[in-house]
Length: 312
Image 1: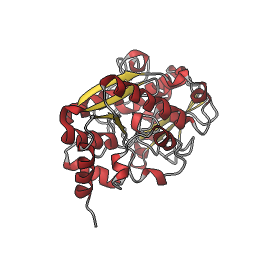
Image 2: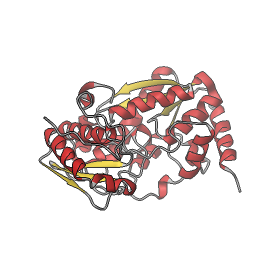
Image 3: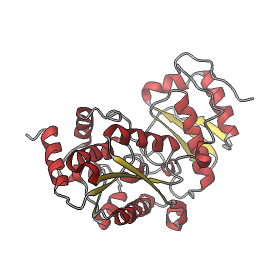
Image 4: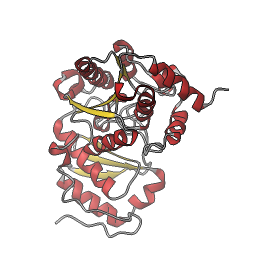
């Protein structure tokens, strides 16, 4: 039986054969981070990690991507585009992820051409094709992106094992699909909705939650948290503070899903992929309105024993 380390070595060797260099569609999640680490090992300065900044990428995810690229030692470029320029994406039908990834990877190919790089790699792993409705994978195939993890049969579990061997800070990071995955299929994706979702999730992050989503049901915020954090969210202090802050962000109603966090609970398959340019998302923003939530939000050192501040 081939070990994860042996598969990683084979993937690294295949990348080394790319004489024209490689550009990695880089969200900073564990999948794209492993591809970037392998590529940097194989090609050194001829490997470039590239993150596509758009309205659907949380500011914190771009910050994380920068930190991960720095830990790997790989060059990190940031390019920009807007999914909201596409009427097909805004319509938010069941193929939204196809439209998103087509645009993201297309932008990657444009930047690769500018750099004289022939190969664009993504972070699709061997577990991805079996994870339900994944229209984004169609875009990967159509654009002929190279998927070293998939090509060498490296599963998600093995990706995390390789990430740990590289001592990557994202080895255990939960997958984070793009902000548009919080909007139910059929409800238009708008900048207003994306902004209030990001601000709401940034609030939960500053309060110490690890696995969470804030689903936007046309103005009703449905908070999901991981099963092991649900008891915390049932605290009356949290409930009051979350309600007041999220109403301030523009939501009309705020609810807590007692079933907890569940992948794809508004649109099948949405959260199955890694965020950002390597997944159905994202990875998949830097400043702008997306960061406006942070400066005045309460910081919580210990979410298990706090007095949640209410808004003024």
